Length: 255
Image 1 (tube, rainbow, N blue to C red):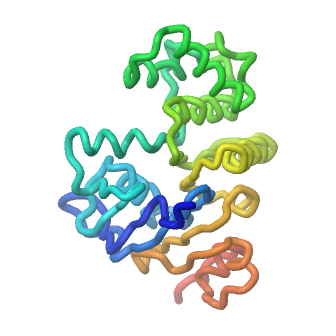
Image 2 (cartoon, helix red, strand yellow; image 1 turned 90 degrees about the vertical axis):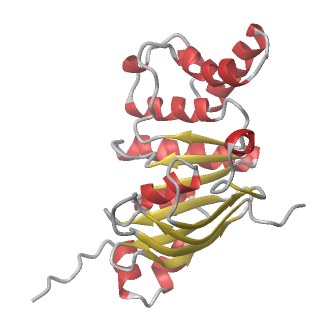
């Protein structure tokens, strides 16, 4: 068994060109098969960090090593090879509204493989079945609930059998019951397929149910103020910032 982390972030300063850094000296590992959460309040850099991790935004300094290869320095075919190792589901699900669910999930296979049409069709149907949408292959995204669109987004992100799935705010905009169902889907896929999940979220209900380990970012600290099992952090942390986040306590108003 390979005990090396599947993702290793070291010394990362993050943000946008021409602006002060949002993140400073961020370092952490993600173990294989883990459901890993990136947490924090608004403006702390959660989504920015994910953009750095998937190579959408170059960090100011530092490294992001995915399965042994640094995505920060990779170019051309080497970069494409790294990106084939992961799938991404964005906050809205990002489905193409003019395509059926089956066509949405088929698309990555059509673009990135030379498989025959019947094989592509079979794989796409299998991915939709994994997320409980086998009966909705011919539906358009607008015909589905928000939770179903998110699950379809996960199915499309899994189309090329990546070893890592990045999910940006998967439970955002969902009612508690639908969010719980999505959490159960993520947990089941991780347990049954061994896929590593990296989830950006501020939904504590999802955090305690779905994740194995988390990092907590803080806007003022511009980095990680806690990491570990979220249940342990909630129950045992002595840092008032960590306790406030996990116990949903308001920050004191400055005099």
